[in-house]
Image (spheres, one colour):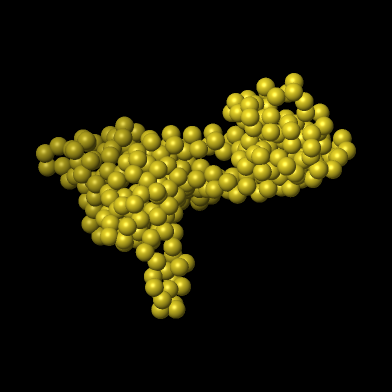
Length: 334
């Protein structure tokens, strides 16, 4: 076997390493084709030029594109390994440190390319969105409970009149000091309460006869600032729900139509990606989210859980024991 020397300078080797990150497996790009044509003569009848290649798909592509016979035998693989190991000695002008830097740059470029062309990148947005939405639900409930308790010292009757958390925060921020509420503010208060003038009048009557204590200006200022923050979080939660719906419609429209946006997103999040979810058998889809209960049942030899996430969907068909396995199969293939 005869070894030929490539006419490539030291600087060109860095360029060649960078080109490797742009190569699609099994496809000869223009840069690789140019490199082969510059260093290998065109094969003719009786030509004994054989190019050692480590990939079977790439060998076939080179044969079709350039017409050079390629060898992928075990001996060639060992030869390539030896060249890679002793590259600083075999390649003139190439220092060992230069090769290390080139390999490091190749690794970074390859990782960036993998992240850039990740097939699950849209799934990742859904996973992050549903995780943030679940966290916002907890935060909104916690903050709403806090503002109800805090503002309840001043206007305790408002808690029963306005049960909705978001609406309560808006009403508390609008009223402020209950003593300042009068008939002139009823139209604006009614608009906050979805044009419910009767409820607005009831709030006014309750404010006039309220048993709540008076608060200082600094206390009312802090309550108002906190109410504004709760309102902003609740409004962002609504926009996040819209964003999640749009993403689910683009990525998994069948799953969203079958189970809804949030349950479908939770299934994708728990599976890791939509691809992983599609590969799960129906029996696994059926108990997604109930892993702890499953292992606890196996440990205690009790009854194993049948379903977890899919029971959150308001459907009598899915809730029925008779059709749970069928529903899991439908979800898997959607």
